[in-house]
Length: 510
Image 1 (tube, one colour):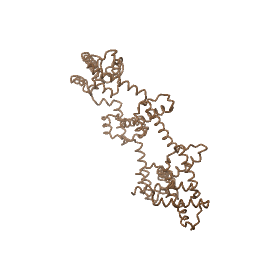
Image 2: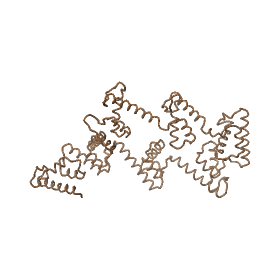
Image 3: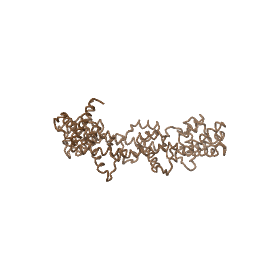
Image 4: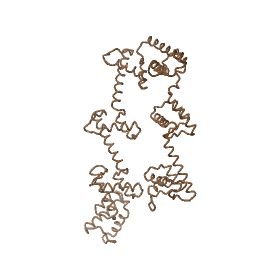
């Protein structure tokens, strides 16, 4: 115990002895038995902010009078402390028994945001673990942590995260899990929560998709084992270790012809020499020549190969061309096959990967830039309302790592803006208003903007908005410094000082 604390304890014991003897705490000045005690009592009342929470509690328990306002505040504070000790949290519900306490808590949050809550009160509330956010936000976080704890307990008990529906021990858990997946896929889940769920091995796909992936991986492992044992991939019907392996192989070929096999699965199957056609090499060669001859006949008849449909007589040829491009990119075509295909035109041209629709959008983007001089596309562009959605989709694809390097390079070459245009427009608007305010200060020598100021009628509202955003903690440091350099008044109203602004300025000076 420090010397100062020992001295305080000594005086406190003297005051407690005075009360036991006289039944009150009104120590007269210059009391004969302890002349300094009255002065010490007066100092405690004046320097409440320098006392520790433990010291304040001791004085209150003794019946010490800090004054009417402080007494009422401390009464509510210790009522809140008792609530926490009983319930283990500070989420006070607005019911009849605790309604006054809930109202008092809302008032503390309001005065804190306004910067008018005394520092010692802030210190006492922080020591109690007071939540300065709105109650519903804090309670939402508390609920999330409760569901996460339930998921953790489920994994410890069962060894996995496949929570059944219904799950009686925690009925809301399956719905909560689905909510996390939806929020994650819409980029609305906090990174801290993503990290917590990832630490459990959380499966971001829904249960059905995840089980399909698990089934696919099991069959792929069986196919690898077959190849390792037999040296080929010609799986017979009803192969004993995996009776349905041949059917699965046929399913992959069918889905590949339909363009429904994801690229990562194609790479895995190609890595073990998977045969995408169900014929031997001789028949494969004959089949290839037959397809090429049919394609060459169409070219000779029409002079081009445009307009091959997805269905009908030319549908299989269109899919065959897609397969040849895929083989060409992976070096699976012989030099002679490459030469023959190139003789028909740019069938193997890499630029075709972009797709006609995507290239049309690029042309529309360039037309917009030529017309307006920028690429800040408004949400409802009258000449092409879908252009803005397309641009947003490119940004989303790039964030997810799904946009190819070729497309990123092409978009960069036309000056595509990867940042959200709404943020850029809001920032430009803010700086325009700031410039008007700066000009107002230069003309009038102050920042007391009148209502409906003729050059900028909304300027006063904008000024009030900046002040409100600052008090809510929503104003960036850069904007604070720009406004503060003009001598901007951060006071909420005349006569109210702002401790938050003073603290912010002091921190910046350091």
